[in-house]
Image 1 (cartoon, rainbow over the protein chains, first blue to last red):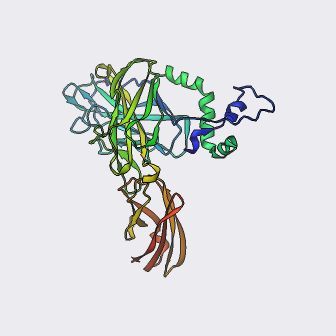
Image 2: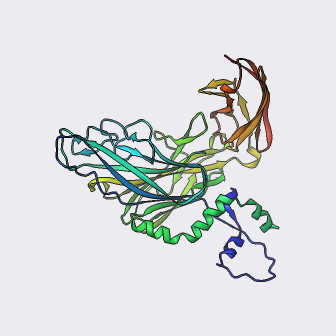
Image 3: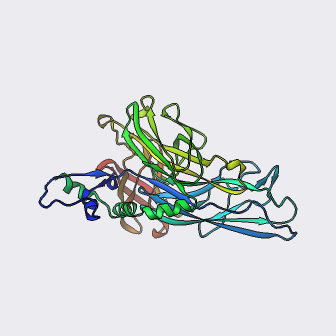
Length: 162
Length: 260
């Protein structure tokens, strides 16, 4: 509740409202809690060059997070398949990429096919337009189609306490 | 007087975010051109748990494509440390309704939905998540990686003032991982932070510890950290604890633990 209360004095300090000298009016206002997530459009992982050797491809997506309440986490999950062999894997028609997609918020790489959604970032204070990077990695090799892949990923901003 | 009282309520981090919000329009616009995003406002609905409308959530789509939005109230699952996540297998639609649980939001548009408590909440309160999922309407046709959004916000329907119950039960201390913990179960009906402290006495002498204030869901148990076990010699220790909620002592007692 504390952070919801603001003073018009803050606005006055920003010059948004003219100050009347000698005015004694007591006024107040409120800022509702707020969450915002912006992400760049990812472009990649639809097709991969043909070849017999195994290769790992990577993709970075920029994001920005604003949240007045905390603690919060940013995580990522498979938005198409929550379980089964397609869970966490790129798919092309009935074909499933053998290796799972891997994700990282900057440190360790985690498979998207695990039972828990990989956490990308954590904030224990309010954040405003804080940048974050979503890193994706896909190992490709051997047989199987090299094009027509797709996957919906859900980027989650979540409160951590009730 | 009112202004002075509120001035003391401002926290520095909240003020920083407020200033950034007021001055950061250019950044938002830039992000929107880079792919855009979604916002939810408010991220906490805090209301007394009386049947009827309890709040409104506004969703704004600043992406360049229409989004399919789905909003679902879900119960929390609490971890032993008190961190909560929405239960993906259960919803609370029998108890909480969303005026438009599913709709399409065109690029640049916003929509407000009303959250309603259908009937009295069991126990006089309800603390849950509201999960808003947003997926581009053409997601199934897009090649490669497509990103959607998911916001997990808080629904806090507090008991009426005269129905508030501040109550906990404290279990036997034990060692979890590398720490001595005291299981504390919230048997009341609020999520007011639970804290307090303990005096640990034994072969290593006496040591005062403070509990980290934690919001515990009614009915949930949190393993409240007491101290790292490595800081104590082998032997039998007595833990004299006091548990507080909103500055009120809600439990006190003595427990023992053997460290071997």
